[in-house]
Every structure is written in C-alpha cells, then in structure tokens.
Image (cartoon, rainbow, N blue to C red; front, side, top):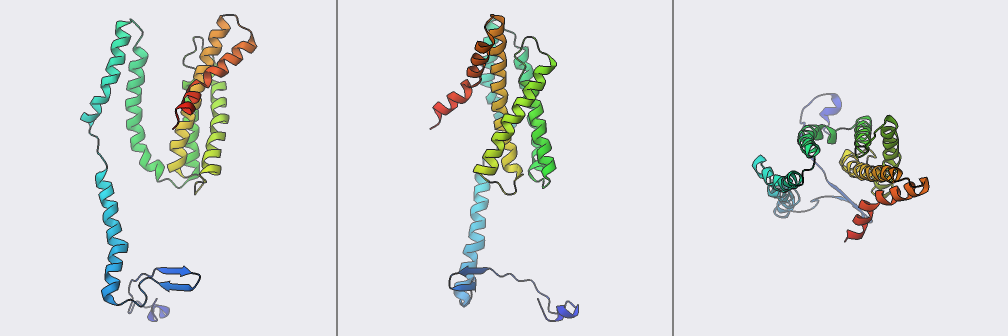
Length: 239
C-alpha cells in the first residue's frame, strides 16, 4: 500500500488494518476523526475485551477425566446385575459396551480431521459409512437373518435418512457450505440412528407376526406401528 511498492521495493512497507463501516449515509472507518484518548479505549473494547470473554468461556468448559467416566458404569452395572439374576444372555451387552468404548476413542481421533475437512467428498463418504453401519446393525434382532435383510435395511435407511438430512440441513438450517461437517455429521448421526432403531423394531415385529401366522397386511401394519414407537414417544415428550 505504499508508493515504493509500485516500483517493486519494500521501502516504507508497513502493516495496517482498516475496519470500514457502511450505512445509508455513506461509509466511514472505525475510529475516524476520534482523538487518541477516545480511540484507544474503543479499540480495547472491540478486540481485547471480546477476546477475554471468549477465553473465559473456553476456561469454563468442564474437562472430564477417565476417572470421572467410571461413574457412568454404575447404571451399566445395575443392568448387568439384572441380566445375571434373571439368567439372561448378557454377552451382547458386554460386546456392545466394549465396542462402543473403542469406537468412541477412534471417532475422537478422527473428529478433528473430519470437522476441519473442506472436501465434500470426505463428508459424503463419512455419511455413507454411517448409513452402511446402521443398515448392518438394524437387522440384529432377527432370529433368521439373510443377506437381503441387510440390503433392504441399508436401502431403507439411505432413502429415509438422506431425505430427512437434506430437508433439515439444506431447507431448514441452510448450512453454508452445504457440506458443513459441523452440521451434517452430528445431525446425520442422530437421524440415521433413529432410522436404524425404527427398522430394527419393524423387522422384529414383522418376524414375530409372521411366526404367529398373521396375514401380510397385519404383519405390515403392526411392524409399521412398532417402528414409530420411539418417534411418537419423542414427539409426546417434546417441551
């Protein structure tokens, strides 16, 4: 921004900033026309005071230690005790909690890279992985699992989940950019998880009704009503 710079030299080069304010009366620079005694407190208020507020907010965030997490195992222990006393099969519970522990550790290391990613292909790939995993978990309650169960489950979660994610992020929230991982990843995870639970309930109820010899229409209707139980309960509890 200096005259010597136009001649390719660095003479008199300096660093400065300008904050331009615009309104219906025109434009002006922050601090324009103010004496030093008024300008200096103004700059401190604009920059340093806000910085201090941001720092105090970060310091107020509660850090959770590994020892603190042990307390969350108390309700888990109660569930294990009930399974043991009632002579239920608790191997699935142990497997689920162990898998959750390692998955959360792995995701924790990946989140920083995912949230800082500026490539939509990476975000879309993560969403597809989430859909496939949810689709493979959903048929778990079935007694007689077949390949097409997993295929139907993935397709169902894909169409229902992606449509909902699109409406929420692109129509309601209108995220910028459209692939913003801070919105797509958490919201996609919650939506796909709800789809997975609905598919699991529907599949289990459909299988039970089929074993009882019900008609296809009754199997379909009962499975559909069962799939809506968690969503309906959530709607009733909102507020």
